[in-house]
Length: 86
Image 1: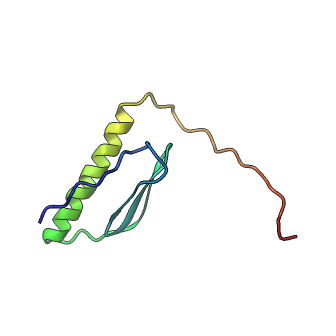
Image 2: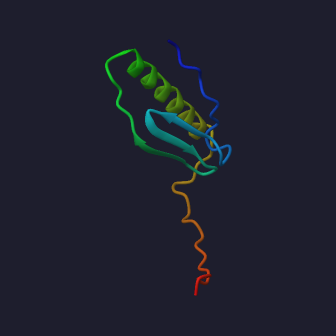
Image 3: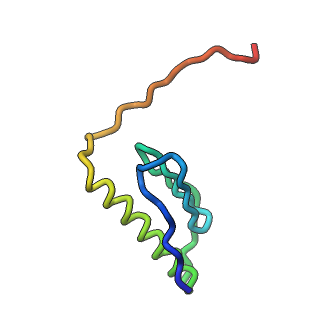
């Protein structure tokens, strides 16, 4: 059983989300958020999930290595708005 490589272009859009077990990799233009959990079990399914994670993290690392990166990202702009409910 071979997993199909998901379409995932790190840092290229605000739409891609890939699930591995209950782990989600969410694409953004300035970050990839990884949240949730996955059990990598000692069976074929666990191996398939581990390989998928390895592929996805490899894509993220390759994308970062190909960029001219700042030391850290600036803090996002925060805008205060009035309460629409009163």
